[in-house]
Image (cartoon, rainbow, N blue to C red; front, side, top):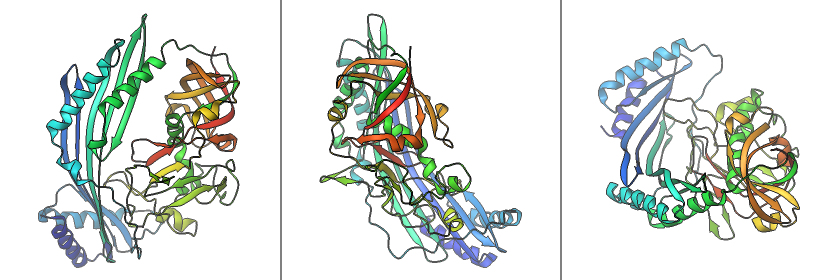
Length: 458
């Protein structure tokens, strides 16, 4: 049974049963991945998935039901389960369906040519990436992880108010972790690529970057404890922003899980900091950054919007879904997303990033007499408190001495407070980089220079 036929039959049954309004949220997708080890396939997955949630108002309360089958035989049970569920809801909060917006942005996030790449071609690329990684340097002794995959998804939402939306997206990713050894010392380095055009994928570049990163860590030592100027490179800065992104969610501020409640219009960051949430992805100096968490609507059917969360250091808005917006007497920002068809609507970013400058990483470090460049952080979520903003994170990277990167450092801990860090960022770089999207959104950051942070080492 097609999605459209199932939708029409379900809506007709909901009306007959006595629902006053109703909605379906439908997802379908394919996930392919191959891991290789020692020139052979170590793991292979190629799975299709379908899921649909139905919700509707029955006797004044919202009820939910779910199915993984688009078959007419499940419709009566789906309707009854939602009605029964509405009868046991004890919350006094009134939940409403969203009737829709007059316009939606046009966002293209699907490349049909990616769907035509065969499984064999993907496997061959993964095998070639592993072989090429070994060939980079004789010190490469093993490859801990080598994977290539593709993801394709369709999300559709429709309701009794006439809302009827659909978005299709896909992307590919490749990931390799190289382990090198020299004089009994071993180090690892990783590199990741993602995009929706495998024609732009270079396994040679990925392999070379992973090995170069691993070799650069050889000979790492700790540093003397103290307060140092710290540069978080674009990767580590991205990880840090992703870890603390929930402080910008209105629902968390309302629950006391963020210190940004009622801070709109106040200065919360350095004046050169602009933080944006952009469903279409950024364009700077004529360059369109590839991002793959883009949709013209959120999981409630609200049109997504490009917006400044922080503009020139001033908090302009938090991110809202319809429920949190109603509590604050405002409108949704189009950030009501659910991680799966079975989950409740929460809040998530689209493409969340700090606007870059025209300052290179080399220029950022040239006036640093003695500082630290952080390139990796371990146990990130265990070392942060998203409510207070405090963090203490095991890290590694490089020393900066007299404006130049000198030697690798390890076994250090960088501590601070995220809210203070936003105010203490001296400058941002020109090297905006996005990470692979997650259920919380896609995060991008340039390198950032912080005036001084406690670093614990020797």
